[in-house]
Length: 323
Image (tube, rainbow, N blue to C red; front, side, top):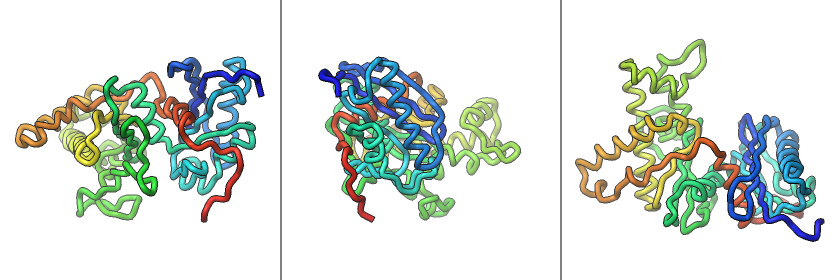
């Protein structure tokens, strides 16, 4: 190990198709980035993460050991105490001691966190107003979930499921959700909801994309207008749920649907404003003013993973994971 360790921190966001690594300097600014395809299956996921850390170290002219901390953000259920990852279906991972495996390969402590939680930390660092102490990161991807930063720290809940608002049933007559319940918010306000709400947009078996839906709605397609309105209404419902349960300073929208940019933000704010006009209680909450979009030029999950490395539990020795 070098006598003097770099103050720089590395974070790696392992996604279903790509892996994005960043290096933060002592002031928290991104000074290096690297992207690569993500391997499929446990061994390839480990190899991808190792390659990302080693490549970033090479670009900085140091060894992986010299980074102040190393953090990983990954989908699935993550035990941040042990570094164990389970149910990361899109990565082909059912059960993986990722933290210990990476520590063994890199010869140094590694910290692992769920990617939405990591993104919440990254969003708080990059987006939240200077005076904000709390934030909800609303991830609108294939599914819907939130990460919570309260009083400047991640809030995972008693069993690690804080922020799983996508599995709150809002329509008892709705479709069955992947979780087994019926009419969950995720089935009405996520990427996977597009084909369900706008089947007319599917082409040759390919589900419609959010940009296609909103473009068709803008062009006056009646079915697209109805579908876009339902999605916007239910995203607004997700914002209300987050504010009314944890009263955060800001709700930051991220994930694939956030690429819609201003039309999505404006639509959700308009829905919240319409609700406030008939409810003095909602009007007093300034929901629209709390709503922000994640920046499009940086991977907040990778930044958050680097920040997780400063506070989470390192995994240098393998410890048995309870069955």
